Image 1 (cartoon, rainbow, N blue to C red):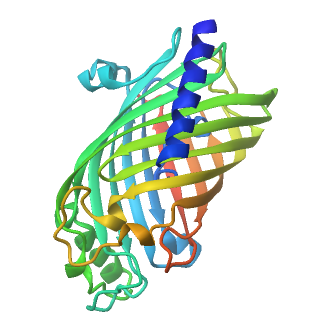
Image 2 (cartoon, rainbow, N blue to C red):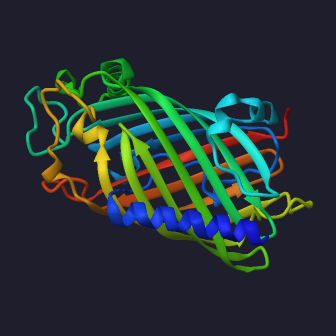
Length: 327
């Protein structure tokens, strides 16, 4: 227990130094928070984001992920790169994620100089979640490898959706950020501060990512209210759970490849310069989660302060559907 506390203090110190010295806001798709944990050793979950849930169609326009967790993946050699708590319960998974970003006037061919560039990213993310029940700490590590640019198929996916729904046809994707690989490493730390039975809890959290897509760090809090899942208990819990959550973060931005292009060299016709990036970003996420023995359902909304100086705040929403206990 003393060692776990030492590890926790060391992680908080590292994250604090990163926050002070360099680095951003939370991930667009975050499946690793404790309030999203699914009971069961094996599960599959689908996530879908779209700004239409917030009556918008710009900025972070949509994203989806396909997530799989299983004890089989504990043998993934990439796990050797990850941090773990001592005397922990551990689970490993893999997720495919796709993100799409557009300016407001995405149906115009011309470059929108005062708006964000078009960008599509696709990547595979391996992750490990380490939980210590006694100290109520949780540490998630993840490595993402993929591509951003035309090969990310942002144009094709958004165009097909808009054509199927009779929406405005996107015409500016020829101005998108050009192809380059994605390599990103991240850690997320959480410490439960207060729990009232399985009806209410508050946790502090921090995260950091380093790579050529995102270099960033954030600190914040999350709280849940309702019939809760307890990630720090292995004994039999209620099979039916329903609860709301609120997750807030304050962040410092170092680099955002969806705005600035490749970290080392970029031949894109439109990127955002470093002096236009908003370095301090706030984000609020809230939603409702229902879990049964076999099903996970979630509806959520997210609001973020402006990411570049010439833009205002942005919002999006989404749904998650998970299946467990069937294998």
